[in-house]
Image 1 (tube, rainbow, N blue to C red):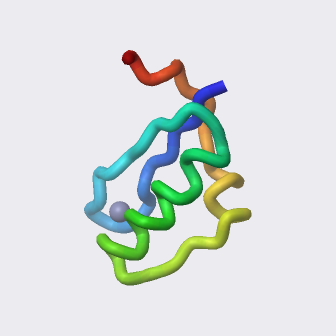
Image 2: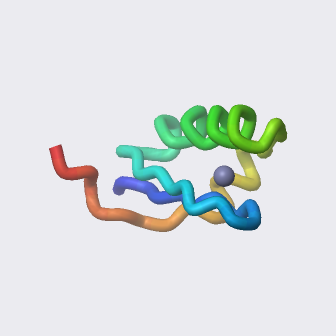
Length: 57
Ligand SMILES: [Zn+2]
């Protein structure tokens, strides 16, 4: 099942969809680090993942 994660930082509209949890975690952490100079625990990311339709290839 594909997963979707939306950034919760104020004013940030960034969201990402990936094929599975293992794939989405590094994408989210990269965004948090580069866009917000912060760090998000893997557990915190997994906690708010939503199921998503597969990315249209
Ligand atoms: Zn963000």
